[in-house]
Length: 120
Image (tube, rainbow, N blue to C red; front, top):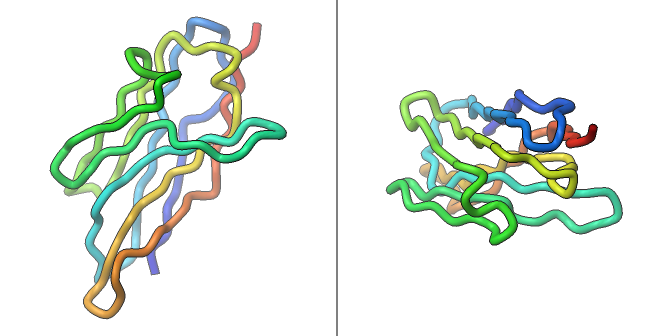
């Protein structure tokens, strides 16, 4: 079973920066894509950024040019550098990992969520 542990959320002023981290643990699995989603109060969860095993990235239009996703395959970790934060970036951020094993095809694992609040 794959477990994800997130860290790095918090309270930041508009224009500030935060870096989110997510590490996968467990055994006998391989990782395909990794990504970050967020859910604002009263809204549906949405994709913020994703990165494939080959390093190709995809961003929501609202964060392009401000957020950068990266991964460290050796550490089974994914990161989200968030710069020029805006109040509308506030929400719970969830790490997502698409993994597979010898016995099962691709599945999703989710982190517990970390709160990001952008406010003065």
